Length: 130
Image 1: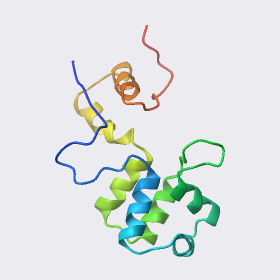
Image 2: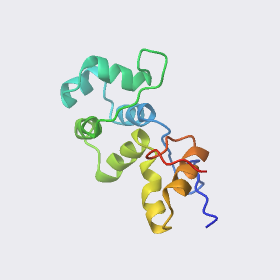
Image 3: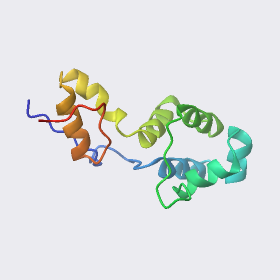
Image 4: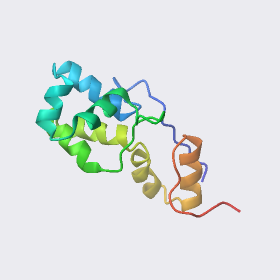
């Protein structure tokens, strides 16, 4: 189908978050919120908030989560709008930005995984291209 997607920022976006840490730190700065405030307001642990803000899992890798409840707890604590929460969700789960496009273009899983791979994202499922 010749479809190409890119996770690079475009000129129409004022801001683009490349990871959860960038997004959380941005909103903490504009809302004048400290990590200790975020711990109290989100119900998340001090360790989790610290890892998110540092973008580190303490094992040398970037922080990542599979728990969407963390995104919602942060969004509520930071009093984000739905649009801002969606930005945070995409920052935490960048592959989801492509999903609607995959369905709209009626791509098969191999085509989808090639696009994800081209953009440095994990594939879906275990189907490999022959």
